Length: 507
Image (cartoon, rainbow, N blue to C red; front, side, top):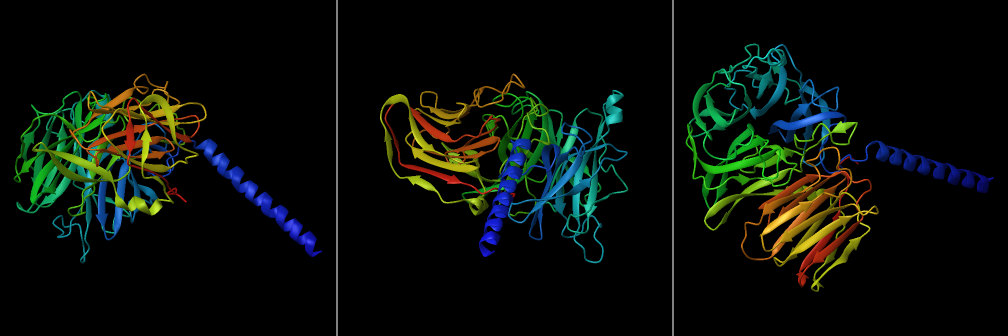
């Protein structure tokens, strides 16, 4: 009888495990491209991250979200929270459309001194400023379709109350007037709102977050102007004991590799005017799929950015069904000086070490002068992280699957450029702009190349030279990549290589 019970238990356990495997496989089939280390909504459309704020140990991520459709429609503010910027809790919709229109992008701040008066009995209110976009006016051919509104929360961001006096900043009679990014400017003792206005930026000031006065404009004659300016952000970054002011401006189209992208300016802000010594257009990310990148409020000197991981060229067409689009890894921003010129560097946050598994490392490897393929490592899993270091010689790293689909990350010594090739990465025919090679300059003129990249189910993020050159791309392989190969046209000595599988943030 004991033997029979043991046999029966083994059978039931086997059936249970088989059922779990079948369930996991079913989920995999249904959500083949669901990211495992990036935030995505449970379902439906997402675009710009907005309203990002840190308060009482919680990071709040709000975002443009279609509650009932996997294409852009009826835009609301979705909501998620995290204690570490790695693991996320999906929350109910925070702010729904109203009679003033859809809830477009904006920002949220901690009003610690209750300058708005929204806090009662010692409560510290969170105040969100966003763009109300009137679709009825737009369809009627009107111009003044965008105004700025506010909402507030007195329960630490869980629920939001729209201000009865909305809109608080009315349209000045132009087509594009949106995406306010607000911060407290201590030297001038006032709130500053940075607003995208057609092809430039306007700055506004307020003492109470309700009444706003225009200060100045920036950008009409500098920077990239291949499309509409959107989703700006102004904040200080310290370098060598001095606080420089960084202005991020997202633009669509007009990016360095077509479509959407984030440009930036480094200069000074005196509470009224932003000024910079403009030399060249600088891009935060040279890949095709980082857009609307902005930073969290209330994080002190640590400036942490999240961007939308897609491109308006094809965002509504990518081959996912239950959800559509997601966000980049959170990135810490810093400054670096090269030939007496400042550049932004961005690297994934340190907290991602929490999901690292055991690494496989190679301390030294020589690939002799040949253009043939050298197998670097096989049986890789997704998601995973890779790090390499080698001299600035021509190379190509291939991530390959069993169908011979591949992503190629490379460096061309003659042009001093990195590149990312996704022409043969899987499904690419949903848009003519998707399957192509994109390029990023190498700003360093000497020294070894350091390269790290993060591979997920449907994306790759490449950080070269300590985050000076970044390439972010979504990909849609028909099977997961399982092999990493290396090609070199000359002798290449790899002084460091590591492969680190990563745990899913959802398990």
